[in-house]
Image 1 (tube, rainbow, N blue to C red):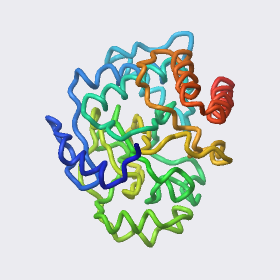
Image 2 (cartoon, one colour):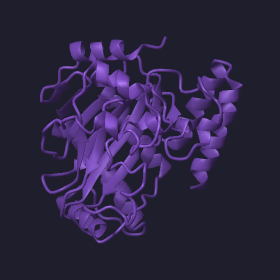
Image 3 (tube, rainbow, N blue to C red):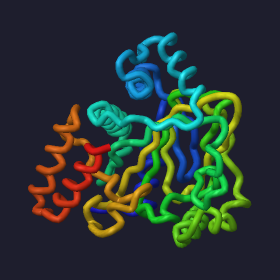
Length: 302
């Protein structure tokens, strides 16, 4: 049963009580993760970066020395493209699913982005990037350019400090959320809705986890000289197979990003795919199965 935005966030305000809260805004919540929760995620993310940088001899992602070497190598790049090892991405998917489940953040959630975005954000953007109408350096909401409008955004700093880029979040009330939800267009065209808003002040640090509504305006603010590593992904409050059309293969922001949540606790991509197919067959959604099979083939070809 689908729940609306206000019902979801009302539940979060009542029941999400982290030991080290980070935000207490109406549509933004967060916390500083404990080392026990954060360490396995950090290790896995560094393993993904290390494996991309040197597949034959990856750095040790369990030690400060190995992680610092990975950061140094990343800082020497101008633009970095992560190799998304699908088995490792499934392990990450399961870690984040368990983290959210323990906190009661999955009540009403029917879709889960897979694979997640694992990013290395450089101090300076690539040439010409900021001039683009869809650059995330501009204040924006993801559905403005075609993403689903029922999303909950999740973000985790894996490596960050006062000298790395920051995710700016803008405090909004219900009427501002509703105004942002009615707009569709480029990030530049939506500037009139968000340029007068104030960013919520905080200093980024490794282990900070943030959850916010998809119509909370946000943007990347780059700072020198540090390299930021982070995870971001989106959850959906409605059936991820409720719409099956050209939006599924729309590139960045495509609706094929969203799978059922990993309730079967799959640890490998083969298991994750098998579970997804089984659930689609169980509910008789053969069209959804066909769309997902095409998406899996695309992922395997990358």
